[in-house]
Image (cartoon, rainbow, N blue to C red; front, side, top):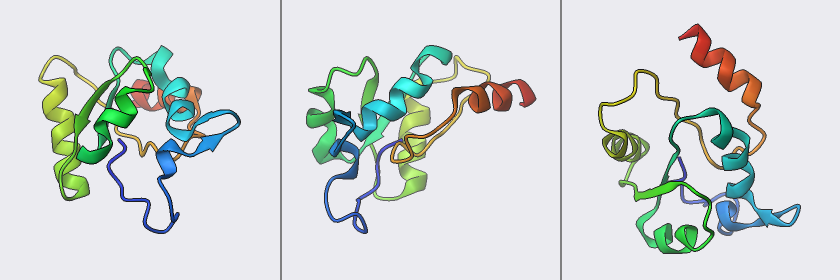
Length: 106
C-alpha cells in the first residue's frame, strides 16, 4: 500500500531517500521474497515515478480513501490468492518473520 498523502511528513515520504534508497524500496525488499505477488497502490500522480524505480512490483492507482485504495489493490490481485496481507508502505521496518507468522496463523 502506498496511497497516503504524506501531509504530516511535509514531502513525498515514499520517495524520500533513506540509507541510499527510496523509503518504498526498503518496505518492498522486506516482503518481496516471502510473497507470491506484491502490488503497490499509489496515488495516481505518483504511479509513473514509482514505476521508474523498477522495484519488481505491480503498481496500481489508488482511490480517494484508504478503503478505496485497498479495494484497488484487491482488484489488481483478483481471486487467485487464499491469503492477502495489506501493509502501509510508509512503514519500512516490517519484519519478514512476522509476516510469515501472520500468514501461518491465518
